[in-house]
Amino acid sequence: MPTSFSLFFLVIAIIESVAGLLGNGTILAVSSTSWVRSKILSSYDMIMIFLSLSRFCLQSWMMLDLFLSLVYPASYYVEKLFVTFKTVFMFLNYSSLWFAAWLSVFYCTKIATFTQSFFIRLKQRISSLVPWMLITSSLFSFATCLPFSWDIYNVHNNFTTPLTVTNSSERRARMKISFFSLILLCNAGIALPLIVFVVSSILLIRSLWRHMRQMQNNATGFRDPCLEAHMGAIKSVFSFLILYVTYFIALVLILSNMFLPFSIWEAICVAVMAACPAGHSMILIWSNPKFRELPARILHHTNCQMRPRSM
Image (cartoon, rainbow, N blue to C red; front, side, top):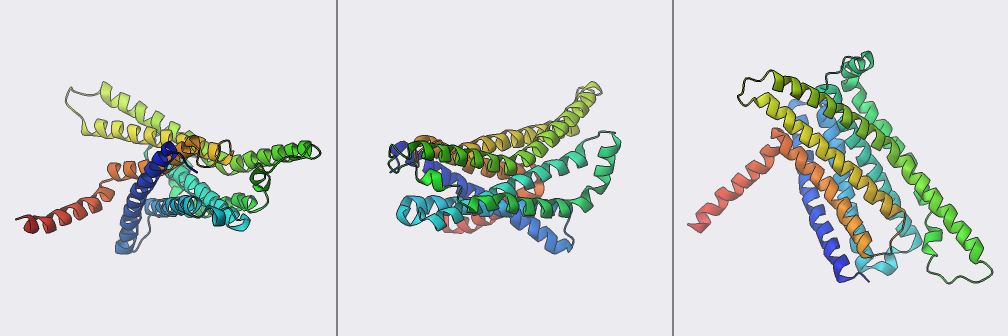
C-alpha cells in the first residue's frame, strides 16, 4: 500500500496530468481548427496535432494505469492486462518523444541561420519531409514497443516469490538477463529521439544566441522587440531541453524497476513524468499567440457569464 508521502506525490501527478490534458487539448483543438478553416494542413500544425494527441493519450493512459493499480491491484497485475498497459504506455511514450524531437528539428530548420549545404537543403525540404518523419517515427515506436508484450516482465513479477536453495542462482541469472533486456529495449526506443532532440536544440540555441549577440552589438540603447523575441525563444528551447532530459531520466528509472510499487521514489518519478508533458504544453501555449487565443476567449466568455449573476 502507498504511504502518505507516496499518495501526496501521486495526487500531484494527477493534478499535473489534468493540467497536461487541458494544455494538450487546447493545442490539439487550435491546430485542428486551423486545419479545418484553411483546408490546408501546414507542417507545423501537423507536428502539433501528432504531438498534442500523443501526449493527451499518454496522460490519459497514465491516469487510468494509476487508478487501476491503486483501486484494483488484483485485476491490474494479471499478466495479460499488465503487459497490455505497459506496451501501450511505451508506444505512447516513444511516439511523444519522437514528435517532440521533430518539433525541435522543425524549429531549428526554420529559425537557425547556418550556411552549410546540408542544412540549407534540409531547410528547403523540411515541409515535404515532415509527414514521412511522423509516419516513420510512429512505425519505429510501434516496432520498439512490441518486445514489451513478450515475457520481459515475467522475471520481475517473480521477484517476490520465495527462492529455494536449488534454483536461486538460476533465478538470479534470469533476473539479470531480463533487466539487461529491459534496459536495451528502453534505450532502443529513447536514445534516437533523445539524440535528435538534444542536437537540434543545441544548434538552435547556438544560432539564436549568436544572432542575439550581433543585435546587441548593433543596438542603439533602446529595447529591441526582435532582441527580446530571440531571448524568449532561447528560454523556451532551453526549457524544452531541460524538461525532455528530465522526462527521459524519470522514464528510465521507472522502467528499470529499481523501486518498489507505490514507494515514494516511484511516486516522485511518476510526478516528474506527469509534469514534463504538462510543462511543455504550457510553454508552447505561452510562446505562441495562436494557442493563447483560445484560453483567453474561454476565460473572457466565462467572466462575461458570471458578471450578471454577481450583480
